[in-house]
Length: 178
Image (cartoon, rainbow, N blue to C red; front, side):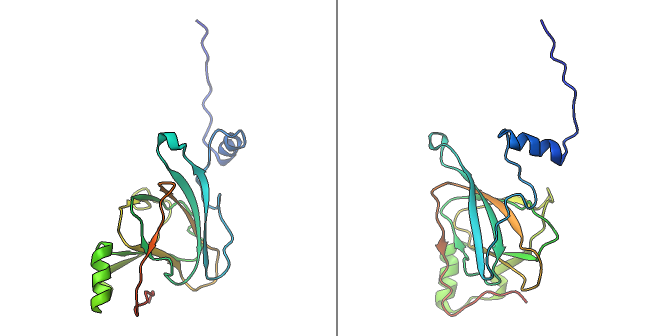
């Protein structure tokens, strides 16, 4: 038997970049899939789609440059948030309703919506304790950035490849950050 003795190397950006250039991996690192949205716009780009024979799945790179929660809504299935990003960007907020979409719609219709119905998270990147999670189906949520100068934040989302979004009709209400 011939032994193949391998010498371990440090996992450096250069080593990982080489593996990517060899088309062996896709790096998920700050700025790697950063897009260039215009002011008032958020862009998403599919990094890959899974083979449908193994079940539909895709990885999205998302870059946010919108100060309003215009894309606030729900999905009919779960999605993973991978808050891998640079902490040296504009602050990004993730607002999550503290109820499911039907309850939120009832509160909007009844005119009883209030700040206590939401949590507004200032996104923290690269922290294994808080930065990677699954948003469950039908949980209303949306992202926006602070209206300050600075680089636009990016992160990753995995979700079923054919899943859409149902936007929340806030009627006369508008979400904003203090």
